[in-house]
Image (cartoon, rainbow, N blue to C red; front, top):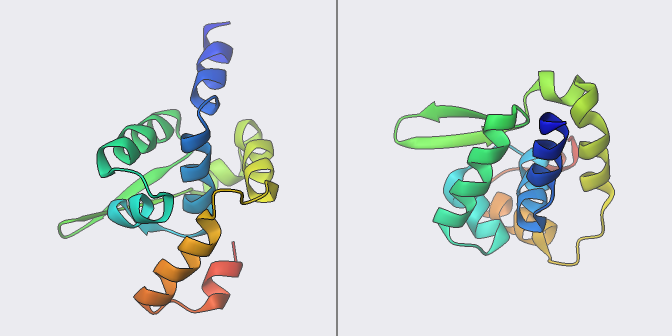
Length: 117
């Protein structure tokens, strides 16, 4: 029962679900996630840490930067496939996906990279 309760607590925060949605679409640096969500870096760090602890997000370090992505194992894990599908299909009322596109455009990423996930 504790594991189920932890799962609901993890998914019970809209900001955490928003972070999961953008990270599932594109590997992003921590600052880029904060920029897309319009949240403080410390807030994003707290949410991403919880997602990492649960195994649905992984981090990759490159120099001074930390990048976050949803690993292949989480994409095929029955605990996460439904959640990932739901956050992908959810309406973008907060405008996160438009800001994600702006951030990626500024980084020089192609629209195909955005849409492939």
